[in-house]
Image 1 (cartoon, rainbow, N blue to C red):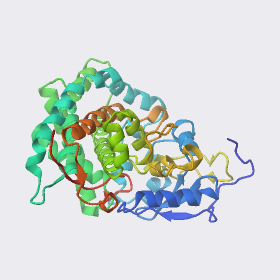
Image 2 (image 1 turned 180 degrees about the horizontal axis):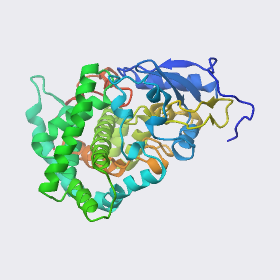
Image 3 (image 1 turned 120 degrees about the vertical axis):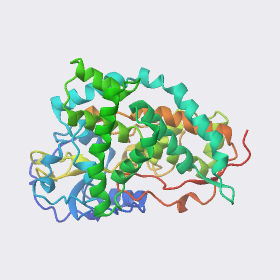
Image 4 (image 1 turned 45 degrees about the horizontal axis):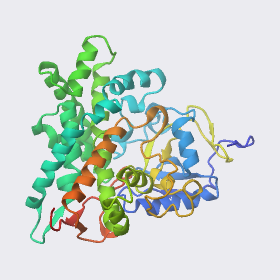
Length: 426
C-alpha cells in the first residue's frame, strides 16, 4: 500500500459521517453502510460514538489488519483528545470499554510485561487441558435444558446454555466463588452494553474495583488451582512485576475477554446453523468440519462488532488514501464490516458459506494485542455447539433468525435471546 504525500490533516468534511446506533439494532446494516461509504475514500469513514464523540472507522480488511498489526498508534486512552479535554463524560456508556488500565490499553514494554504472565499460564496446551472440564459443564447444562422450557416448549439457549458455559468456565479458571458469579456477569454485561443510563454506568464503574479486590484478597488468603492464585504467587515470588491495580486489571481482562466474546460466538454459531439448514446438515453428516464452521462465523458474524482503542500520537497518514488522521483522534475497528469486505473475501462475502476458502479473519484482533482469550473461546465453542446438536439434532428456532432482538451494544454483535424448540433428544 502507498500513502499519498500531499494529504494534510484536517476536518475532512467531504468524508461521510455515520452515527453508530447505541442500541446495536442492525450491526450488519450499519456495517454495510460503513463499507459503502468507504468505497469513495479508500476505506476511511467518520463516525459518531455515543455522546456525539467523533472517531474514525477503517472499513477494509487490509486497512484494519494494518491498524491492528503495523500502524504507529497507541492503545493508551490518555492519548485520545476526548479524554484529555474532558469530553468523554463519566456517565458515557462506552467509558468502561475505554478508560481501563490493563494490558489492553498498555503500549510497548508495559504491554509485554503485563501480557507475559497471562501468556505463560494460558498457553494453547494448558487451554486444551481444560477440555474435559468444559465438556463436563456443557453436558450438565444440556441435562438441565428441558427444565427451562416454557409452556410453549421454548427454551432460551442464550440464557441457559451459551451464557452459562463461558461464565462457569471463566469463574472456575479465575477462582471466582459460585455465589459471586451473577455479580460478575452483571458487571461485564453492563460494561459491554451501550443503552445503559448514566447511573448504571457509574455504579458499575464503582463496583468493579471492589469486586476484583475482594477476589484478590480471597485468593491471597485461600490459594487454589486457579489463575488468580497463580498470578498472586508469581508476583510474591518475583517472577512478575505488577502493581495491585495492574493485577486487578489483568483479572478484569480475562473476565471479559474469556467470557463475553465466547457467549456471542457460540450464540452466533447456533443461530447461523439453524438459519441455514443445508450447512447444518452438512456439518452433522461430516461433509463440513466444525472448525471450518467456526472460522466462517468469525468472519461472517463476529462476536465483537466494533472495537475502540487506537489513538495516533502523531498525525497518521492512512495508506492508499489521501486522508491523514490527526494526532489524538480515535480509530475504530469495525469487525462486522471488514468480515464481509468483498475486496478481501470475494463478491459473495455477504453469504454464509463454511465451505469457502478462508482468507483469514480479524475477529480477535491481531498483532501483539490479539485477544488473550481467543484460544479459550475457540475451545468452548468447538465443545458446546457440537454437543448441543448431538443431543438435540432436531433443534429449531422458535422465531425467524432475522427477528431475534440484538444485544444493545455497539461492541457486542449477537442476539439478546435465542429461543428454540429442542425437539426429541438423542
